[in-house]
Every structure is written in C-alpha cells, then in structure tokens.
Image (cartoon, rainbow, N blue to C red; front, side):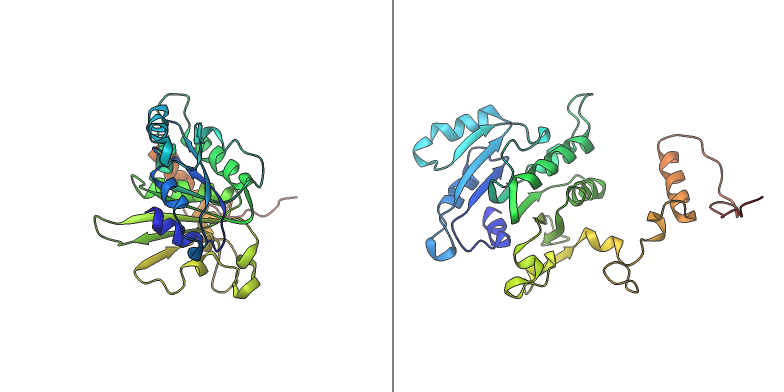
Length: 259
C-alpha cells in the first residue's frame, strides 16, 4: 500500500515526507529505500499516537532513517507551515471517525487534522491517505472534511467490489502541474490518467453541472431554501428522532412580498 501511495504522489526528486500514523516505521523504511532513479531516497518524519508502536520503531533504530513524533493527528499537525513536500498515511485516518470519549467529536477532529495537514504542505504538495471507512457515511465525512480544508480531493478505489478493495484519498495543495504547467490539466484526476482498474470519485464534481461548466449551479438539494433542501433537512431531523411537519405542496414555496 505504501508503494501504491508513492506512485500516486508522483515524486521526481528527493522530498521531505510526513508519515501520518507511522506505527513501527515500516512505511518509512520504504520511503528511505526509494532509488535515485525513481526520485529518491526520501527523508521522512513519522507521527503516531501510540507510544508502544513508536517504541517498536526505536527498538530497531539501526534501520530507521526518519524522525519520530508522539502526537494525536486529531489535535492537528504540529509543524511549521509549508514544511513538507508530501504526506502519506496508511490505514490510519479512519480512526478519526471514532469517538473514544464523550469529548471526542469526529467532525471536529477531522477538521483539525485536515486544516493542519493543508498548512504543513508546501504549495503544489500532495498527500495520499489509504483508509478503511466503516461505511459510505464515513467515506463522505472524510472526503468532505478534506475539501473544506482547501484541498483538491479525489478518491481512488483499487479492486472495487472485492474483499481486497482499498481506498486512497489523494489530496493536492494548489500549484504545480495541477495548474497546467508541464502539461497538467489542473485536475486531480490527472494523476491517475492511464491507470487501469481504478475508479475515480472527485467530490468536487458534486457541485458542478454539465450545463454550467466548472462553475455551474449547485445541485437543488444543496441550494439553501429550495424545496429539495428543505425536504433533505427534514429527513435528517427525522432520523435523529425529532418531530417535523409533513411535506405538502406548500413546502418550499416562495411567498410574494405583501405590502
């Protein structure tokens, strides 16, 4: 999975990489071992919340080339702005959706993480996070939090429909080939052009319309005050057990101003 993440990062020169949820440093070993012909070797810093996992990495310190930091990614990414060229995360960010205590709010932890990650990456930087969402709601929650932080985001799925299916969240900070230099088309999906067996879901496209181009109108259910928006909000409230008024032909109807 780390090799797959590296291929999506498309690094062409030795880079400083943040390994989020680094565990015992296995992904870091791969980052350090990239040959010069493939753009390596890379320098990396690992971040993990588990002291025991970091202790395992230190036990084999002779083979660890990166630095390690004990920190909770749900509390942010504690590095100077623009510090990293890229970031990887393998099987970690789904834990941000879990509430271990009553004080943990998944949405807040995701926002804090992605805001910090966005700030820590240089302009033109890229991050790849492989994760295992428990359901579609978690998948949407994670990708939506990344987009709100300012990332260009795309979800790639390897081996869809099988027990070996793996999701990769590819994130970019504006700049580089994404803005059209060196033949780039300014689209996150360009990083997987020509790759077979990969389905791409770019969450930004949910806000676009074929007839409006890239800046088309919002979908009706996302236009505040529309009937579709009101109905969707009522359904959300009903699922929370709240009592709402039944829909009628007057739901969402615009009223003329009376003088």
